[in-house]
Amino acid sequence: MSVIRVGIVGVGKIARDQHIPAIAADPGLELVAIASRSRPEVGVPAFETLDEMLADGPPVDAIALCTPPQARRATALAALAAGKHVFLEKPPGSTVGEVGDLVALAAERGVTLFASWHSRFAAGVPTAKAFLADRTIHAIDIQWREDVRRWHPGQTWIWEAGGLGVFDPGINALSILTEIMPNEVFVTDARLDVPENVQSPIAAHMAMTDIAGTAITADFDFLQTGPQTWDITAVTDRGTLRLSSGGAQIEVDGQPVVQASDAEYPGLYKRFGDLIRAGQSEADIRPLALVADAFLVGRRERVEAFVE
Image 1 (spheres, rainbow, N blue to C red):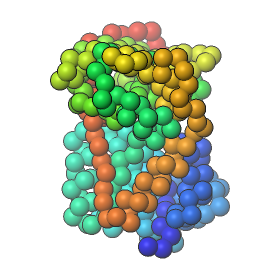
Image 2 (cartoon, one colour):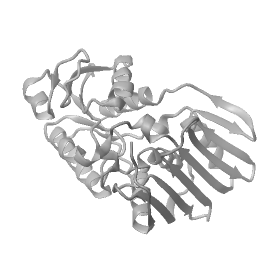
Image 3 (cartoon, rainbow, N blue to C red):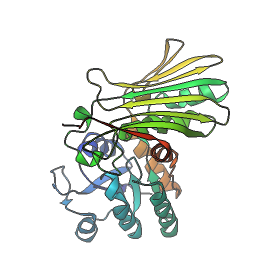
């Protein structure tokens, strides 16, 4: 197959910081157009909407959707209906059920749908998965704490219904968890701290387990200043593994095993290209389902208003 021509819809911080550089670095891909209300200058034709891009822009083979999740389904359906391969930034949708429609339409149109989970492409994740595969896991603890003002400035959509709040970064940890665990994971309890002036949680605690009865806990916080924390610790019968820096680094019993730089989005786009060339789709909704279950069983506690 020749070079895959990509259009991006929604050019905000994540598209500028990650998607555009990753596409530029991949010899099998070419960014040929963007659609964004602000029409930023990125060196390719810019349009306000996907419809305008498809009608008046250069030929495109694939669309990467970097819009907020609440509005993504309609745009994804339009791209798939037009016969375009679709890359979904995480989370793949604002509900679990809507992703099923996208999977069905992609199969009907014979195109690729890729629900991306960038944290699964962190350097330490494959090593962690192999480490846990043949061990008895006693406990998993997730600490995912970051500063929302630093990473999501002015992004009011994140606080609205469907925006996930602290689960927007927290789902990255859950995507790693569902990738590295030998058994399926389910939620047993949750507490969601929701500011009195918004719809989505600013902090959350989850309790989970699997068929083996593994004790799994997760704490998510959007108000951590100073050093940021993205750690997963697994205590096993043969050593303790610690994934840190969002999965880029691994220690086993305190000794470094993997120390790597950020290569998540290049890995995502390589996977997207490979799926397109193989005529396959990949749409794992398990991380999103864990978030949905936390909302189902979670106790909501109102906390003080969030003011950016």
